[in-house]
Length: 327
Image (tube, rainbow, N blue to C red; front, side, top):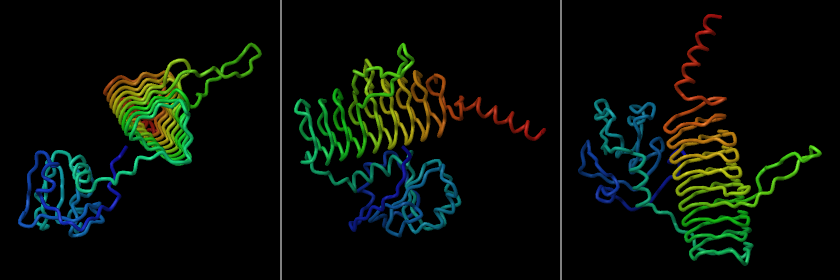
């Protein structure tokens, strides 16, 4: 899940340094601080003279962006070289991680308007479902015989089958299907395809987010498990008996094959495909469009089709490039 500051946040109240100091952590200010204030937060290219903006070291054309922005107040990394930037009559707030800092500021100054916690009249709910208080269920949702914790938000047109357990403060966005039967077919004695029964369930932890039109299949005999803090993007397919550990990010259009186990704090990039039965360690990064056919150890980055460890992939690219030059 990539951070994009696309929403223009406007509030006519004028904020000063004291209003954001708590969220800055360790910081240093460069520039004239006599009148540090702002009324809105915008992307640096769309900012006006009353905007607070941020910029990270990895951004291209930092010098040009700072030179051309109308903003007078910029949050940036401490590692950025300001020698060529101090002549632009701007104030720089130097912090360790601008993205984290700007997130804290937005949440404090521009909090989300909390939707009322209601169960829409058009929702269909199994009479044996156990639903905690302070739960919101949107229009045309279907809730089977399952258990839902406090603070859960289920948007419209979500379909949740029986034997699903959802932890506290989880959000499920429109159109998602949780607990459907997986694609598990076997050949019988006549070599005809028959469906292997799926009698397991789905267990979803606390603080999980599941994007729109995502499908999470129930387990065949055991359960499909989504750990605490996991964030799943739109249009993701998670097959039966998959286990995803805490704080991993599964990005749009990814496919996770059955019985694959994904460790903690992993990043599975858009359109990735992980075959069934794999073991993915902790802190693993899988590149965009990668097709993973082998287990991955912790703290590695894999990419390509078929996916390889990043160092190996780079070495192969060097070999291929040399062969092309020699041809």
